[in-house]
Image (cartoon, rainbow, N blue to C red; front, side, top):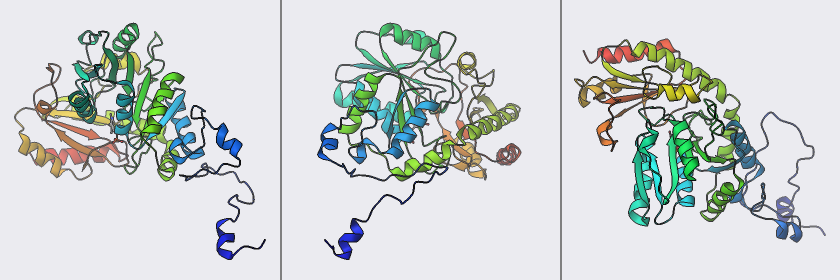
Length: 395
Ligand SMILES: *Cc1c(COP(=O)(O)O)cnc(C)c1O
């Protein structure tokens, strides 16, 4: 029966006349996914690895990126979330309940700590803080459900005693989850590290950083090798309505191809800067895990057999430099832009006062204000020059 043009247009074939192979996978955007038959509808099941039933559950576009992230991190299953912090949130809300205890390193990514203290206040979850450099500072009672790890730690970049901590968690049957944003699955394998072949249970990764590489897209992931953990997370992911945009996924997919090259380059530039920064009299301490003087360097050596250490460098200014001086330094930089995050093409700088950030003593850190550099893709010599001219403003 002949239909009206308006209807004809709506129901024109969606399939292209001929399949072609392209460098990047095709992009699917979906809220509705159309079932061919009621059998297809009734036979769908949420535990299927690739459950095509509704946009929030995933499309070929999201499953492709998820599989790629799982592969890079050498896990098996991966869920995508709209940001790194939402991945953290999903782990906490899936595995923590009233009366449970969770252990977090003192140097963890700040918003995770804030989120956990909020859970503590509202839902009676006990937050305990440990020293990432000392596995003995963790005590596992029967109430402990989750151990958070971060390698290296946010801002101060101490490399934790991963071997000691994960061993301890395994012995106590406590779930371990590593914030893998710094290593990005490239610096070390979180699912098989050290000579003892240890593994964390889960990783979260802010894909916003190295996988995106553009400083423009937000996304997070949770990877595990354990099907049961994945299903628990998947169920919570579904009931909380967590979903990512196909367009954002395609952008990150496109950047993944050169992530390892960018990572390597930024890590190498960081090392060049570290060697120069260490010679500058303004700094009391230079923090970067690959540097032998940096806290946790021995733990880094034990785990990061690739020799890679990301593009983050922090410096602690000598105590005589007050906040006004540090602000002047940051404002005087021209290539380093003042902003949060890392992993993008442009170098970033951020200033911190450690006194507001820690609850444990930090004898391994010098007194003074801290500045973190996130290395972009500029030439190292230009970055050094930029810091040099900003230091001169302080004289
Ligand atoms: C940026 C970051 C996150 C959060 O990622 P967003 O996508 O910005 O929410 C989590 N952990 C670490 C270590 C990060 O650097």
